[in-house]
Image (cartoon, rainbow, N blue to C red; front, side, top):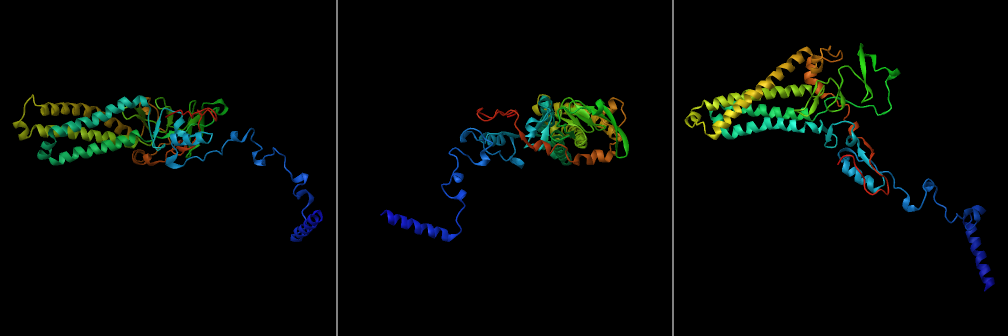
Length: 371
């Protein structure tokens, strides 16, 4: 039996060598050089230490577009051992962002005054239409359309003004940035004009002429006019034209409301049913007084901004008797075209960044700065 086994082994060895040249001794199965150590691991695992259960998962791919909002990004990263969030979730200012960073507005401290603006804009009109809308249609139908068109324009312009980037200049990402040579002002050439730029210690940048740091929003804003708590946003280069259009629309609306109240109260049907105790009569009288008061205030504010546009200066420059920015373009561009300039922060706020509040693997839950 032993002789037969040796003969079969010899035949097998001959058949294997007939397939090709014999393998090198180092690669022959069972040789010491080819036998790995019992606890050896693949080379790509060399950077990891500990058992396989502690090996971190590959980093998550940042969500793109509308998917990059805080909750989904944090949930995905928490499952894979890391945490990423969109930049707008930790944006270093008092502004608030919605719709994945596509819409922004001012600080929450302005919410009560913004709510008052919306109330004064909507409630009187609705009460008037309920009390005397049909009478206005019978007496003077074109005026009815003027009221509603001016109201619609006021609402649209208010939304754009309140939820648009006013022209924010991004901060310097280097938290240790210092002014050049320790100088907080410098003179540079821009468009062939020698201008002075001032250093902003909060944003760590040299502000271009006309740019001001708003203490309410905590941002540097191009052609900063003022911070308006009644719309809840700064008024700057990118929304000044729409803000002026809002003032004009509201002025037309108040004049139309006063005229509508007068037309209705002087109509024959209204005189027939006139009574000081009638609810509709008292409501229309109150709306008339409110429209007169509101129209007087807004009208004066509109006239003031018309003079600013004609002088091509901002409210801050007018109040402090400063010369207008030499880089500001003509009045038509400022009023009609500046609002179409691209935002300087639209791409930055949607970038995916590491979550500074994440406690790491083994820490339990992912903590977010903003929920």
